[in-house]
Length: 413
Image 1 (cartoon, rainbow, N blue to C red):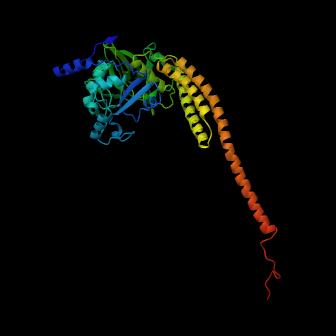
Image 2 (image 1 turned 90 degrees about the vertical axis):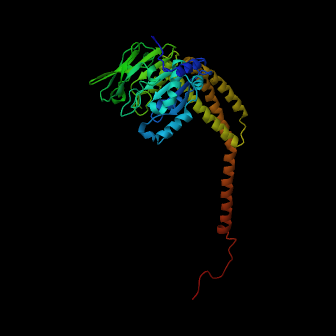
Image 3 (image 1 turned 135 degrees about the vertical axis):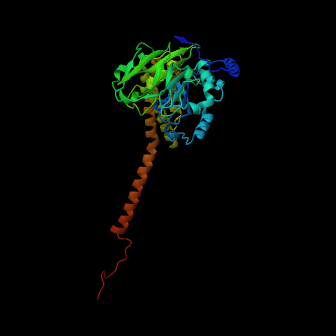
């Protein structure tokens, strides 16, 4: 169901700004087919986000915006609030045009609303008017806040979410149970939730939320004394999809390191928020990703081997030319992968992998040929040294040519 956009520009000045930003064309995906991902919040606990950096389907950017653990952990620590705001200024896109030109989905994960501050309206406009998808993950600094952190409900971002905050509402339990409410939804049916019996317990600790009228509650969590929304989504009037996930489990690498589908659950959600068809054949998708990663690793090792052979004077021109053919075959799979044609991408990378296997054998043979003279020189050096030492010992000890004969060999009294 399409929902009306919630206005965040009550003043005349704000209304004028809204009219101006609508004149800037919206961007729905990057020119090369990748999904631009703007991640705002806590990178140190967002394990799945780290993996998107090596996935060619995404072009992620991180903006540190969390007060979590006093900002002392992660790759970019900020010991004070002023330092955190300075980091946000450095990494946050400067203008509305920068956001809609370079990104397709915005993710808030344990982001502090006060720290993001002046950038909230710009990001909200990018969603409501620029067509970007929006995801907010749970946490003490998300939604209604907990442990004294500020809420998001009255911010321009909070008004676009399909849920309403319960101020300070947070629930912990050891017996949480995840329940799917809309199994036929394209995102929910793309992940085999029923196979994961371990998706229970404290990994579903969550913010308490209310579902807005007209929103779709995809799943909820049940525990002793609690029955609360977990995953809720809706579509804004302009077509943007926004999503609330009350738990921080989806991106956290310490919560469920044993769940094999965690990364796919994240990427499928990003694809859904980008408005693209969510891939339903999960084994095929994961096989394509595995084949791409394997090819990239093997290619790097082969290049290192060829460089090693060149250092010993070997001619690698023939193998380098063959490697270019392999790379051209693999290059056919990349646009297929970016277009979510995973079957064609898997086929292309498998073919490139077979070609690479033959090239690896030739490279190993070239290495042995290049090193044969090293082995010969080493053998001659060792053998020559041994012969020379033997001759010297024989001449000195056996023939005794260096000894002068004497009449007496012992002292006399």
